[in-house]
Length: 359
Ligand SMILES: C[S@@+](CC[C@H](N)C(=O)[O-])C[C@H]1O[C@@H](n2cnc3c(N)ncnc32)[C@H](O)[C@@H]1O
Image (cartoon, rainbow, N blue to C red):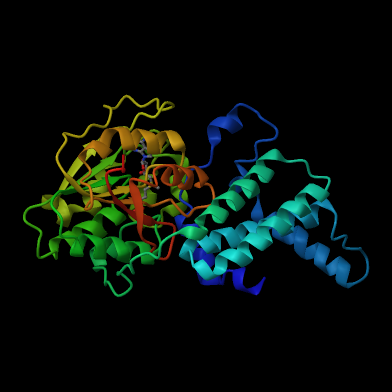
């Protein structure tokens, strides 16, 4: 078990990158088995309750039943934390012990009184994914761990961990192939600033630009990542545009950036904004950080993949390693002939090199 217990720093980083919004739509439909709003549970109450229970067990006032539903849930949560930790690094040596642990957790679930198909599916999907990962080729070693970010970039609110930010700067600084950078999902511009800072230092820069796409429409879940007092003071409401704040944060990189306030239409969007479009120019790097659902990733692929260049375009899925990103991992697995794993920087992101699928 020890190898899978994330240390505090890792847990904090993982929390920073679990940027996917909560599935409020399905909550609104009142499905009692849909716990996707669990992030909104009063965690402090839960911790206090558990702490009280520990005291009662220690003092002999209560008995801890390791087979009761609450104990099973705790073990399942710890197993999920182990999956989260694995996807942060994807160390091949950790895979076998993680698989053993997940199979045990699945047995635990099946032998318990919990009959929860969603949880069961998470474990069976994770096991299936990891079993077929066993043949994966070793990846190239990414850089970025020593990249220094300027104070300008460091003050931009972010949903990303510092390793991912360093990786983005390194990637933009070192890529050599022709084509512009496309960023899908900039939020306040932290990842954009890293890409811009790297691009400005790239000796092969040759006037290339970063095309940033976002609806720039504020959602309530974004508050959790907002610690800049000036942004807090703006008191943005769901549905407000935050484009002016993005522009202010990335001001010093403006000549490198082309901003597109538009929406990638994947089905459910209600925004009165133009649909995202791409003119067909070659793309050197595409960073996908919109969402972890299959429809968004398929829509991205339809619009942009015709402009990928075989053997050179790098596609980064920023949310790849997040717990709810099973559909991103499945999508990349299905596209395995075109998406060849390239880098695994620490954190949720994973980069692939595009190659034209063999006939
Ligand atoms: C996870 S955040 C990006 C975090 C950012 N990369 C950072 O450095 O902190 C996702 C962003 O994608 C945008 N977004 C999500 N789905 C979108 C869609 N279908 N069309 C346009 N923008 C979208 C949201 O407005 C949000 O700003």
